[in-house]
Length: 599
Image (cartoon, rainbow, N blue to C red; front, side):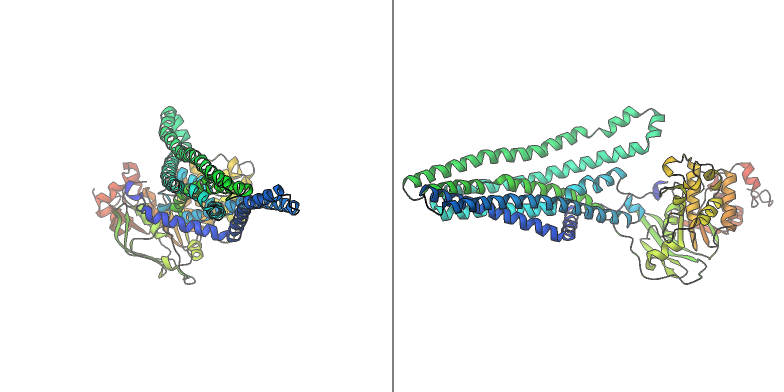
């Protein structure tokens, strides 16, 4: 494909906008499992409440037992009930967390896939296949953990806050001994959240680039083997591995450093509480059970590990969600509610169409009316804008300015069903989808065609003979069908013929066929396929000769339109487009020599 026909894609969405979109996607995922997420929060909060009640109950039980109070055994049972409830609630929260993570991940993947499949192909192409796979798998999985992680993070804040309140109720001086170190904990958490988000984002960015190179190399494995560049490609794929390792180590260094600092800080806080509590116990201000409770509450209040872990999961998930949200953010190719008039001939009209790619106009000022039922050859040198013309004509992309109408109805206003029912495409490098060869031919919107229609389309595309030679004919699995490039192209043509509507766009769809087969396909297209308008991106002279109208593009503009004979006779530059040899030029019915015209 020529450079102007390629698309660099729209500008990268600003990071703040992408972050907001990622957060909205996470909210949508949380709503999708709203009941389960609420249950995770409820179980986690209830477990936190049980954890907060446990030190008080244990302390009270100890004091009663030391006093040999008759109610001591009942309090022992209460202790067992509180501990049992905490364990059961934690287990329930863990099980529900797995369900929420799975459902949220599935929701994010569906959103990303919908964005990818719902946009114009040139927008989707801005993301390399490897990057797209990573965004929809590993990063969606990480992002899917955020709803449950948020619930756990909220619940994890209750024990520290409740424990501080309990310390204040037990003894003011003991509580103050702990509170003196609390600002250090807050600063520790704040620095951890900031550093984690930065390091994870960079790690995922390098991971995406590496995945993209890997998939690219896998797709070109035969070329790499033939060129003998395996070592060079291996080095290219692994070039960022040291950087990936550096970012991975940095990510875990942040986590490990925070854990180490919190591990050093918590014992100091506990020792301070123990020292002050011991003094208060000796003074008779508190009892043994209250000292035990104070120590347990100090441990809960200093439980930065649980909060740190939950915040780490949220930070990693939000960074991953930005990667997945890049697919959700792709501009949708929207549809309207209009239908095409019954029995329309397929008249296609382009009104002052302009298409911009990478800041440059690849089509500009295209105004043209193509009569219904005619065959139009679009010709031009490489880079003239032919593929973009085909994409706009069949609404695989929208023009940035101007309008495209089919039988008087703007393509933008058609329903998706009407558009894909009446507008078909065949490509130079088709991708076969489906389980079997027959399924690949019948693949498309609308009802599944019957076997007779599939075979008729294959015959028209010149595919029936080689399909019949396959082990199971049309029932042969695609994975078991050794197909050449020309055979794949013929199956792509058969798929387009099987679903032919009033407009059929052939984007260099016979480029891999030999001349004889290509002409047989052209004859079948004229005689055996449902009548309609044909737009043919032409490189062969024969395609232009057989067309009712030739549209000649040059540098994104329509240089001329007319019959092949007219253009051949009066435009030397038009003849140069084909770069034909003398024999093929003489064979053309519009040849200047046959018409007595000099070059």
